[in-house]
Image 1: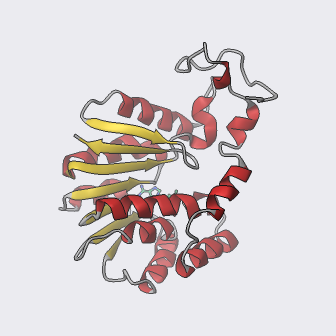
Image 2: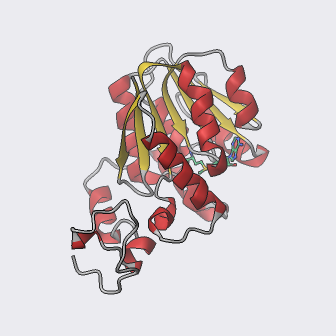
Length: 241
Ligand SMILES: C[S@@+](CC[C@H](N)C(=O)[O-])C[C@H]1O[C@@H](n2cnc3c(N)ncnc32)[C@H](O)[C@@H]1O
């Protein structure tokens, strides 16, 4: 691999130093996925439906934190995973403008429901507007408030959970939801590479540190089967044993 500028000759300890192709370069840290590869993958995937495309464009045009939206490829993965599981109950922590909730809802089994939680009233109102225009308006239940308070009060057994809110609470969210996930149920957690910052030798940002802590916490557990998907900013995929 021609990385050009090496960030460090000594990669972080978890990397196998006998494999020079694992040396990190600045380019890799900034662009986790080669933009050409991203475009190619999008071009060869089913296009977004009209409503998802509208949410994507609306968020890009109107929201300063547009980069938080899952987007075409990750959205399609969420849909595919959900369709494979055919969940009766889905929990999403971190609604934003509603994009990922609508992707996940596509896999709901008959009579299934998706609960999604959003802290910010403005984002929740935007998401609710899009949910109302979808075919899932009666099956998506949007909760407004702090997920740390709301999750514990939801008396459901989850088939699928998507954790995508404040990074400092990921471990707490995991601890709160795991007892309520059915055996062989799945949990997905987003931004597991935190824009590549988890690979750096010195990590200063508190969100990046929180994600590193979460990743170590998950790695050490033996009550879940797990893998990291190298899509977009990294997704931890976990199955409850
Ligand atoms: C990365 S965005 C979610 C993106 C969305 N899942 C998607 O893919 O389109 C994170 C969202 O979590 C919300 N959030 C942050 N802290 C939260 C909390 N404690 N409880 C509920 N939502 C929270 C933020 O307001 C933000 O809208």
